[in-house]
Image (cartoon, rainbow, N blue to C red; front, side, top):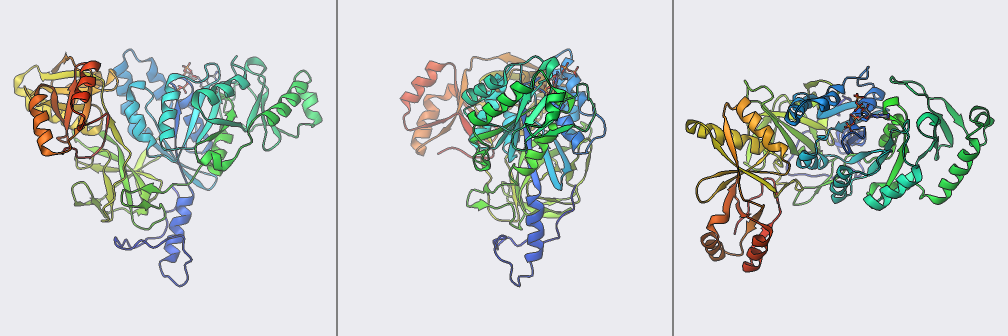
Length: 561
Ligand code: G4P
């Protein structure tokens, strides 16, 4: 990683404005060092529908960033798609995902943090959490297929935070759809204005390259360039070399470029940063074509780490005091050691090895000993990190998704919700002696975000709630592999869950008495209403107009009267 900025002495009480003129302030040097290091950061994720080319693009970005030398390093994940069963696929992904969940590399004087999003649609919650930790996203569209279901969902998530999005239209080396119709579809389906930055010439066998509309140069396509190759450039639309090289296409190239320049919206960085306009690049990831332009756009246009709402106030990334939040937990990578890694996004200040920070949910101080930095294909002990970076913190269960760490100030970085599950099963150990183990395993898997766990108020049933079916398979597999519990998972008649808030204690008591059969508690002890069907939910809502029924809940949040 890049050199860390000079040390600063953390002071929980003071929050000097790092952007203010320095004068004779002795801390000014350190602060401007921090500000410069933060300004160099770009933290982003790639989003796409499965098979559009996310893995390929990831790999090529790493190749251009010099983080890997050979294509194929990330391919393990790609081949895992051919695994025989779904859970095996995900299990394999999990196996390598600790090293590939976050990939840091340097490019053009910047430090890039690329966050991986799980490919499988059943893991939309995981993806959602990852997207809370980025400042920008690259959206990959398969040019033959256009906007697909998962792209739509992911874009909705990005829109919640107005995340700026760069679009990469992939697979131009195949017979694909007309570029103009793709742009129209992106604009109408995703409700985001498109500003084409490059424009393709031909497709499939007659794909000649792309014309860079802003830089007025043609990048010539050569097929089969599986490794990093220099791309031939021809400057200017009137360049006679174009007539020489592409006698058949040059006329339509000139008219297309003229037309698209007139008809499309010009790129405006302000609109892009506001999440309202997306610069669009065309290319072919597998052929390394158009990839460098995406990387350059990230460096030139994507935002540096952004200020975050810390609950009581907005936290600037350049503030000297360390703060941030956990957005992902990876547990039991080595079942013998029961280790957990919390993926932590720094929102301000810097991390230094061995430093102490306040864990705000428990109020305790935590020593952050050997945090990890994630490189392209290895994890290393972090020598320092600044706002925008992701570090991995080893812990034994103290850290949960959504937890905030600070130097003492009572901050809460919000915006990582649990979603009401719509699939339910009741779990019971086949061997009654294993009931404690089952509870422990489910508690830990629940904290990791692998599944949601509820306990029924009556009958002591343990209920599992999921957003995708595959989550049950994985939990069953992991319970048996990591906790040695063989459990049965029975179907239950539950349609959905709602977290409850009550206007007062009397209403809560009455509700608990009248609706006892439908009540449960989540892992944090929050009251939950379990509904058997849509109509029952509607009727209950009408019957209890003053009670709050919530489809989401923030991690770490305590509900109730
Ligand atoms: P994903 O992570 O979004 O699921 O997609 P991934 O990169 O794994 O790509 C899905 C398939 O599309 C792969 O083919 C990959 O080689 C291919 N692909 C990616 N980019 C391009 C491109 O620019 N042009 C063409 N023609 N194909 C591309 P596969 O056959 O499923 O896998 P593999 O056997 O190549 O590993």
